Length: 165
Image (tube, rainbow, N blue to C red; front, side, top):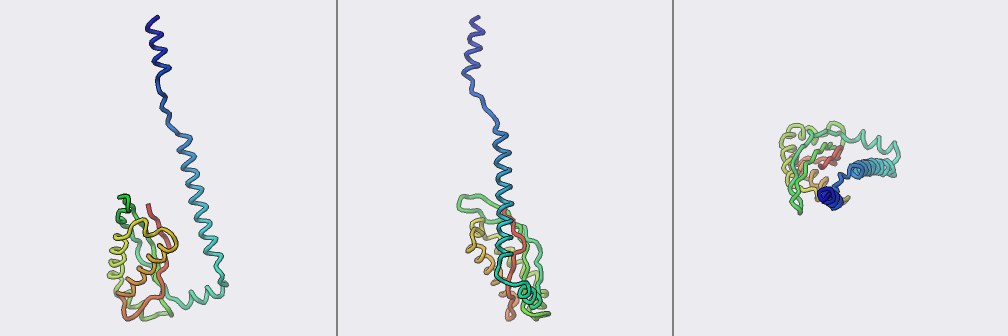
């Protein structure tokens, strides 16, 4: 009897460790919904710009665009020491059809892409946070492109796809 009583006492004193499976699934589903809602919100903001379709069409016709290769780089560690990975697809736009800047860009494409890759490796996840951070990154990308193709210049660098993981 004493053995059974001892066995019952040890069972009642045991701490039950539960795997929070339902909680993990709910957290992942909630995070997925937030990401989906954020992407829908961004597209709504982008489409809600106060430009008519004619203005956008004429601006696109006046600009020549060249897509850069896809960049896959390790970002610098953030202030907490965490590293992240970046995938970036960007498009460089030039003023005018068949501009001299676009021709010069095509000749010096390897140097432009090397400078951009070097820039991206020096950035951290925190550099991409917020509207101001993205504006700084875009302006620095444009500056790097314009340094290589000087005395010509590009009109803008558009970020087509950006994933930080």
